[in-house]
Length: 107
Image (cartoon, rainbow, N blue to C red; front, top):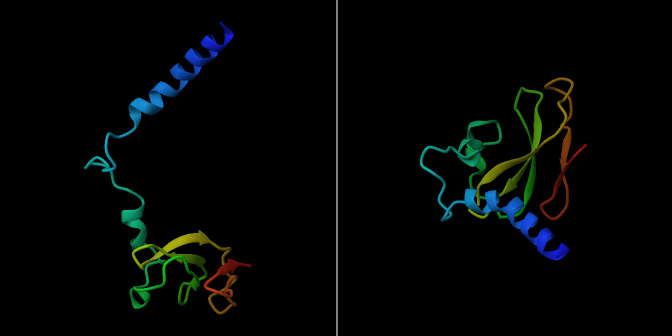
């Protein structure tokens, strides 16, 4: 009896999740994903448009204080992965570093 009650409670708890899931993997036409807006920020670097997937890169704004880590996606394009702390001034050293084997890290 207790197992049945727990099973029914779990089914009722998970039912809204199953009903809210899309029937296919295509988002509705009126929904704009965050990935489609990814290239509008400072992480978009057209000079480095092709890259090796699953590699990381330390980047900073030229003349700015923002630094971040970018990752190369499966399509070979750089995407912003993580924000690092801001530099004290544009002439300060970057707050991230490129590591070995395609890695990068924030300081």
